[in-house]
Image (cartoon, rainbow, N blue to C red; front, side, top):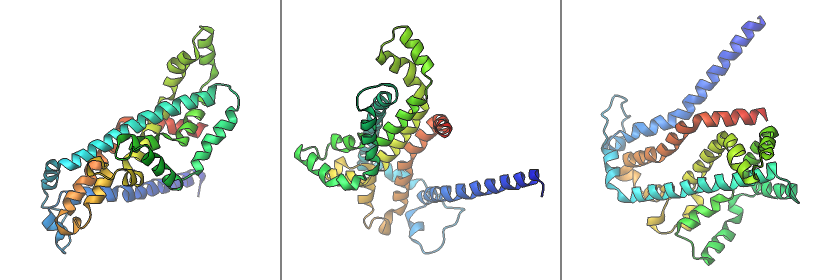
Length: 278
């Protein structure tokens, strides 16, 4: 077999592998949408479902009548939105300090921050619960947002991104008597948009899908996030009449993530390409 023929076969094998992985990833999503478009009577039958229908939008109509669901959706949007904003601000400032500035014990502090990557959230849950109980912050947005602002991975990503920026632009700005804050805001920060987009989406996914901490902190139904509320609604609900509605809720929960990914996919590709070059 010639070398060119071998490369062609290897390329087709990679395409086949990617196609199989794509099917495995999309199949649960397609199946969820398929179930959300079927009536609950069809879903309760023992007979296999036909791919040719009948289909209905009645399950999505039921969602419009559920005001509690929209309250949970609103809570998740508030928590995820402020978590993303907080992580981007804090990680960018910390990344600029660790990546471009010189101050005493910088390397030691950087290592101390990165040690947070080795500490799972479950190991500090009791301490965190005690702190927020003492402050009487449970069942508030602060309790749901503040723990997510601790992002060692975000600090690491932004630090390495700032370090990879050539120093020529910064030196030229300093020759023009630009202050460190101006250099950060006008020169360096715009160069990190791809990394910030990736970090923002990653943070949004973590916050949007978080179930463990909201389950402990939010005990009132009006403060439930979407994940906690949907889990609470599943108790004996799907086995009676509501599987189609639950699938419609799952589709609704996944829409914000899909929209955000589509909107920022170019920045994600740029960030991944930059990290590979590092």
